Amino acid sequence: MQTVCRCRLSIVVMSAVFLLTFMPLIAASMSTSTCEPPFGDVASRSLISSLVFEGRPASVEHGHGGTSNATFSVSRVLKGSANSQRVLVTVGCSFEVDIGALYVVFAVNASTNQGDGGSTPVYGILGEPVPSSRRVLRQVNAYACAECAGQ
Image 1 (tube, rainbow, N blue to C red):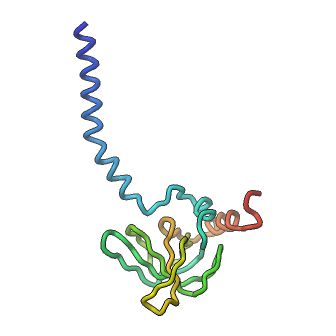
Image 2: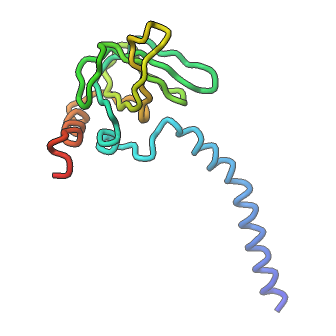
Image 3: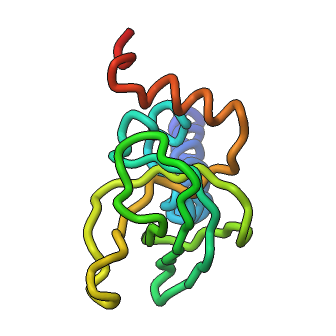
């Protein structure tokens, strides 16, 4: 009877050691993915975003606390409306983009930048900008079309 109890005790101890060993690693991997929204695919981000545009980053600034700000030159709007050819996006994590490369940006929550007289719209973005391609543009067009939604 005592061998059964020792086996159960050793299983509990091994489980506790496993959790204590790997939980910090799991938590760390979850905290580094804060740039990605819960639904990271192009179709979901197209539906959730109030503005989707194709554009080129003109500048990127990495701030304190892991935040990033980037200014994009808008090439074309795929969903919503951008009142300016330049859009400032901000996100609570660090992301990397190649200056001058073409990206599709999924944005939400427009406001204005008070530092430049209120002319540059400021958006939060849903995840990192996606490199533009025909496949990505087809997916955005399929899901961002207001008349096509739900069909």
